[in-house]
Image (cartoon, rainbow, N blue to C red; front, side, top):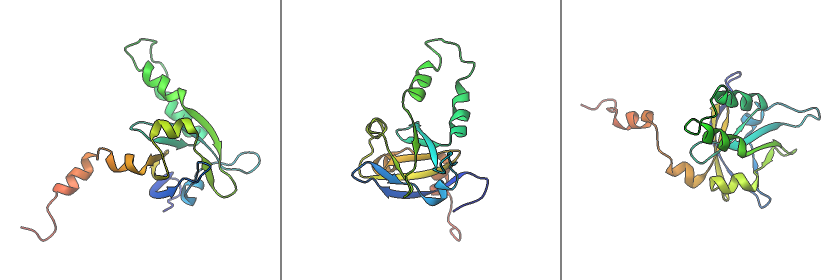
Length: 153
């Protein structure tokens, strides 16, 4: 699904090859910018909930803005800021549309042989299939389960 101007959308499942590369869905590739050599580039970092975030450089900068103006107070978001910046990798997709998942990020997020990629407009979340299956579902899913079915009394 590609809706121009809306960013990363949709869900897909991909295998991680023996060299720890994973194919990036074409609809996600199309959102990533090209460098001077014409290669698609992205930024990976440890996201919340146990997944890897993949975004553009511009998207990464926008995410980083949440830390601007925070006092250097141990009780503030300093630990969140450390976690955000400690696990960052600039990556280039290869000619087949694959991205190398750095060992540090794979281990941190428990990624093995298969991943689920979730488009979240400004980023792609890369989950282990187990992590995606275990994650806490939001209130929208709960409301949909509790909603009366059409035609039911």
